Image 1 (spheres, rainbow, N blue to C red):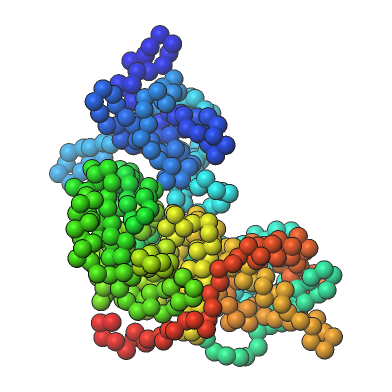
Image 2: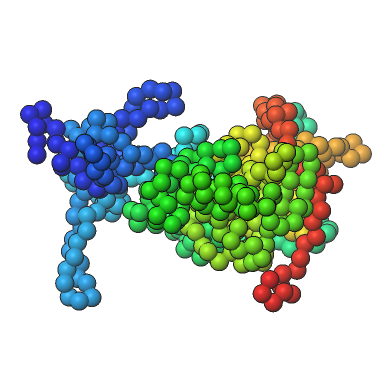
Length: 525
């Protein structure tokens, strides 16, 4: 129904519609991004609308009041063509403008119906859009081919043509990145082809098959293993909406970002209470107080394998402590959108980082890993709880995962896809770790210092593909006079030194008491 000014009434706003919605940006200024109506709810006296801001991260989704909707630019959902069903009847369902736009993205713009401002079709990715952080594509870090696969090198773009032309590589007989030279402040450093040395369990050859998308641009099927497995569908409206308003965990109250499958009867509560030591969920403060009189845990169940100062790590077996592990996954799902809960925790180990005070060991974050990983994954899921973010704990979790890999004598990589925050944290950790090694290289008998990609991988336990992708991300690789060189500019060096001065939390290998187990020899773990 149209009003006198041409706008539509709120009766016309239904699920699937798109329209501009008023919100505050990071500078606290008003903006009107396009949003999709996911749900409509009647409360006494008015309606409220659950909206997802197009091309924004889903953690910004929220309930809004009618006065924040611009109905003048309302876009109705298209109806898809009727399709026959098994019983011979036909059915149709409203299609999202985003899905319809994806179908028609190859048509000329002159054939598209005039529906206001034309929007670009967002690319398919793990999260719904960029987070309120420096925007990067969500998912895996693009990994380059190893030295065994020269023919694929041209597939991966390099800033400034660092690899040279294909003809130049063939004429010179060079494998990509087989030998590298680094330069720092005018001094060249050559990275030689790998030499035989300490053997490690690593899959260094060929392209990275663990990346989110395959080399031909077609997304690979998500892995269906993991306590939290990847999920890219988002087709279920229920799971697209936050269902918990607030969680009280110890002295913190957390606002969940995403859906988590807690019991339905708990989702209507204004606050969900969790025991901060066993993570059991309770419906009221009185129930929590009664539970605390019976719960004698003051730290996560499992073995404490690291302690330095107030920071401790506990190793928890998903089979021996199934209830705790499942409760941990439920809590983590509130802040991880690119994963779907998977209740079989038996094949997994959970490493929980805690901060100690007089009341006990309080959970800060955790990561999980498979007991046996055929893809060299050393992390399945990783999370720092929101009250502890931006304080260096994320890098500490990542560093600890690689320290475990060093003890195991393996190289490792995180399971893909990575969330937007996970991607930023891993890129930062890889960059600092690799630059730390390159800057510590010393000349040998007046010769330029030398190191290989494989040696960097062995020293750090970072998988070879991640080392190469990080060097490319930093734009350090250049092609010069028939060889590959790494150029460390003064800006890179100064930026690295400033970042390391701020990084106060580090893992001390001397404080780690960890003996790796051979899970392949254990019947059912």
